[in-house]
Image (tube, rainbow, N blue to C red; front, top):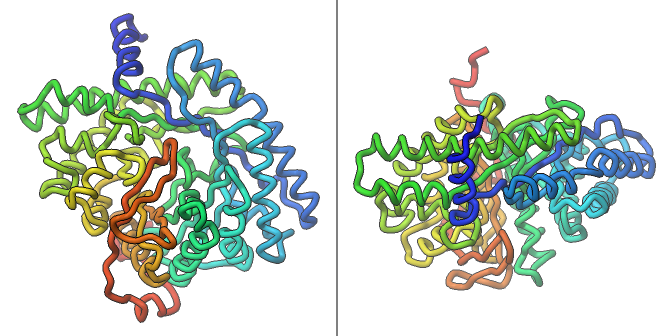
Length: 454
């Protein structure tokens, strides 16, 4: 039971410390929509989504009103569309038609974003996978709410370097096709190693084939709550520091658990997982970088940053898993540049580079996230950055990702403006030396030896 003091404490976290439930994400299987006729498939997809999700937004709003807990986004994830569209789609333009249907369905039910315009190609690429991947630039250009992801590698299968090379080209093409908008379409595209089936966060959410027909997943946040708690224990030992983070993560996750169970009951859809990630926003005081500074760093990126982030991530997980029976998704600390004012400040101060961010991703949840780079960065260099991040995930048996924005027509020292939760980003320099010969090799990097455990 939750006692009155906990209720008061939770209200204070909401009012003063930017605590929110970042998203309720309804996962929907589209496997029963598959048809070889494109028009029939489109109708099946639209009908399945709009029927299953018809009450999602209203239920979210009702829970907000009754409990006073902000729920920032209501979202949908669907079965990877490369699997759903394989029988009907014969060219990239056919997949674009499916993207438009997803967008229309999302608008009809009123959700913020819909994820699952995805392909899973960690070991090999089917013809449907390749058609979807090649359709991504046009699909993202012609839709408002559709998010796309591609899983390029895993600890069990290695890294599909042919797909890594192709995605470098696709990201650059996506940036070019949307250059009049600061290449914002790239914000809706992320590539993964070890992508989870139950991630509620965009742009990487999709409804995995291991999931039920429909499922409710919730993603919580709360960097501001953790920072405020740590302000009260400045100068204390690591033991006190760790205990404070764990207790705070427990409280934050309990809020997510409450919302998830309520949404599940009211929608008559099974509860899946709570993702207990610390997801920052551009709001002042809602920053993972600020937590690192509160731990004792002048700026994120200073010596000791990776150790501080490892400590933070681990204690968040330890506290969170005690608060919910089903923790999943990514669960840890996000370190996006554009969505975190503290990270932006660190880049501007010269404390934080792409190389340091890459080192930090060895110990946190996601990867190189929402990073703007010069628009003249080569496709091969983009693929090299992706390959490096995929390798970290593969070897360390963890999820890693890259969401990178080549800002066409802009260079280091300039910024790109995204607005809202996406914030703005200073353009970061990329190593100028070439990896063209490496990226041009065909095939895949084999799985590491520790993958053979079965």
